[in-house]
Image (tube, rainbow, N blue to C red; front, side, top):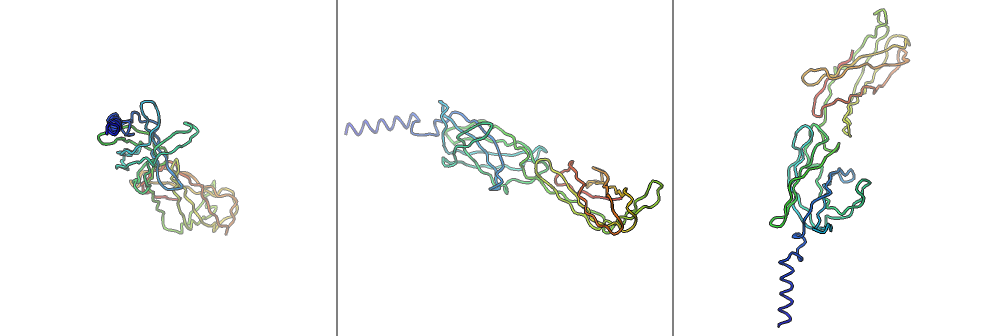
Length: 257
């Protein structure tokens, strides 16, 4: 009985001292970062927990998270949890190998906004055990953004191209137009116009102009499209209208002349 009492006393001492509870040994939060995972269509919030001797720990924790993009829009606010099974070794060129918690956030849970960059603010804690102050890391060019819309005048559009004497040199018919909004890194808008030269010789200076207006009818971009070596009857497809100063969620109107 005395021997059993001594064993129980030792176990009790270990529990009270925290040696039997990894959560009570947590001292440091470090190595946090945020990334998008294309293969799984979700995001990873990485961080590590260490004890007083800088030994990595794999302990369960709750995490309060909010994500604010560079336009000041809060696109995510929620609570996630990690377990001891969510820790593993990860390697990067910058930091080398690290033992990290990998907290996953599905892409569908993050709202679209007007900027693809921002800040991830989060607090890691375990009730009645440990809690760290809120920290943050960058979300660079990986947050979901809203689509844009572009409307055009009714097709077909016959445009007269004048020569240097202001006489009509040719007639260019724009038959259709479409746009593509590229959301990667720096968002850009590419507009493709198709048509046919219905009158005029191969003059070498067939040029049409475009203007792009926003939903409040402000001019945001303008330029020219050069069509080279067209004879009457030649069809064309041109994708040279590329615009980088694009606001996600905006509705634009393209006018040709």
